[in-house]
Image 1 (tube, protein in one colour):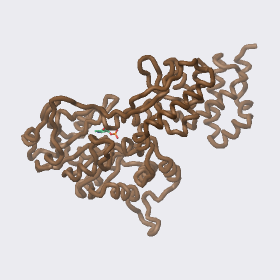
Image 2 (tube, helix red, strand yellow):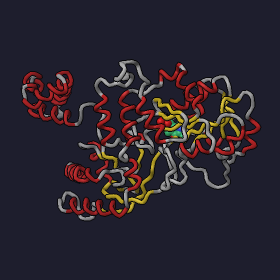
Image 3 (cartoon, rainbow, N blue to C red):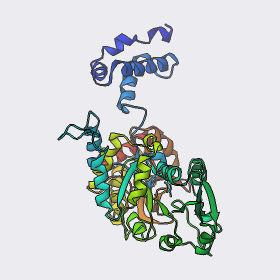
Image 4 (tube, rainbow, N blue to C red):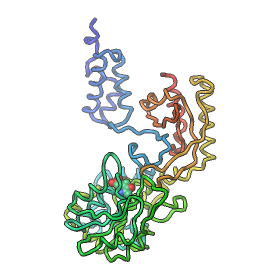
Length: 435
Ligand SMILES: *Cc1c(COP(=O)(O)O)cnc(C)c1O
């Protein structure tokens, strides 16, 4: 018989108890769509008609949306393609409880409108006592755009040529800033900029002096840059884009600028991201002078850049913290990582799906990633596997993303929470079995 005619009808598949339950929780539309996709695969001969139900169940098990939760074994702590910071369980709880109706803009005591996200702003202000005022927007780029629009549209932003950063995916800070109607006044050279360079450019047309942290590259050799404290003597407001969201100095990251130090050095305003070293949700932080922050808050554009209640909830939980997974990944002890990799290797060796020399314990170098601390190398350990496992591991459930180095696939454990080791071992075993 024509296999097309043997493909089970949607109602027949939906009669399966597991799919019927799924339809109750996820909605009939979603479950039907998954069944239809499985039926189509059967019509195309990709799967057998009798496997339509299993294929639909497998598709649903991958998660409620097209976004897949993955195991980050790249050794890159803040990987933009993998959603940067993983949220702490406390932040996840906060997200979930804020998902319904909340008092985000209502004072329950008086029944009147209240300042949106006041609890989050209080937590941020408490974390950075040196900031007279704080505000939260959609992301780091939005914080800069708001500052440039409100404080420098039609005027000049004085910035060093060594700090005109491309953030990623082709987006460049100079283009972003120019798009606001502010004019960039570039000073100095790629490798060296002096206080005199800035001084010669600052004048009545200056909106502000901008200092940008080159968060994803380093320039070595014959270099010179000007400290915030010196820029603060020029008479124009100094805005410091620290990028990473480090709120106070961290001995682990000695070269990474932080909000507290920048403000103490005289910055009028600091901008930063919420989902880099701070370890929170995507957000843009604005900290500093009360009058400037109020101007930004009142600017019409602020309404277009505001954050939703989910972000406010997750950010507040991150700030009030237990430590974030980012914090833990940065501080993981290499000796512990080595023990975990050895154990993985032992478990996999016992399965005989991998040859004796296929899985090896190797030293690795992890990095912070585009989120900050360029050039900082974190000693780490990895499970080294044949490169051919790379694609099946990415396609697995859960998907595992490692990094390929000299013809081997390395699964670096620095960013893998220990509780996922068993899931990781199972994923490797499945990938090895199917290749
Ligand atoms: C990451 C970064 C940005 C952009 O922040 P987003 O939160 O990604 O919008 C801007 N400036 C610097 C220095 C950065 O590192």
